[in-house]
Length: 243
Image (cartoon, rainbow, N blue to C red; front, side):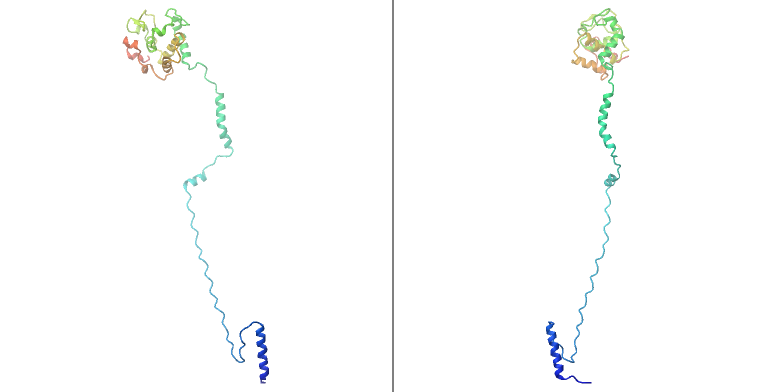
């Protein structure tokens, strides 16, 4: 094998050193025949283990009122205007109803009918001016308390105790018939009519209000009790009940 001359080998080393300097290398070339140390690459760190997947929490149970609200049947949209119109319909419908005939429940009107049908007008006159029986112009002086007059009509002259009647102590002549079949309401209606129509009773008075209460069935003759004259002549309280 032919040996390389020393001057050629030296020139080759200088040329290599110049080339390495131009490349920015600071490492000197190893001498000829010197073993080159191989640097092992740095160990690569193992990859970080992926995060462990955590199972999501189960949903919280729905509250009963929420479930009920979601499943409750909703009002159909078409029904909303119908419901809104109901008050107006009720008002219009009420306006179409016919009112009861005038006087159907008026105690004065009912009392006037009884006055005509029970024979009162035949004795005392259709206008209360008198006939066989006395006129009603002074009825409220004869009977100051309407409860006494009611009892007089219920008992008649035959059933009335004593020989006189009323606050003026008029003598009984036996001509007043009894009306035991009139109930409390009918009795109060006819007395109300006689005392108002012929006796001038004030509709705003307490006496008028009491007779209306009995005539309308809001109270009874028994609840009202005996009048002063009836108590004085000892009318039996059992007669407060009709029949």
